[in-house]
Length: 97
Image 1 (tube, rainbow, N blue to C red):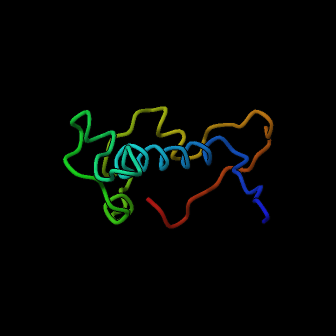
Image 2 (cartoon, rainbow, N blue to C red):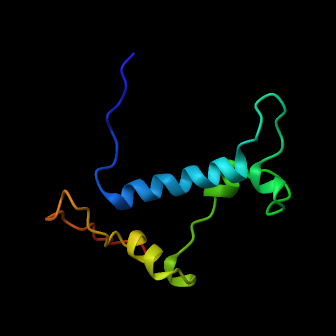
């Protein structure tokens, strides 16, 4: 079996994936595989039920309609410089926002 080496080379890409993983692990995935149903977010009282994939990714949230902390905004706009790639070309969104 072949394993992939497709991992983001830029910090912003890593943070995006880690954010999705964090939401999945805390709000959708059960604490126990043997007894499904209770998520970490439910244990601490943040959520009442597990989130489905449709609830997590179903609605696009636009940056212009909500406030983001300055640090998060820099990652969202991909303005964070990756040390090893100093001349990396920033991604320019044409249709989003």
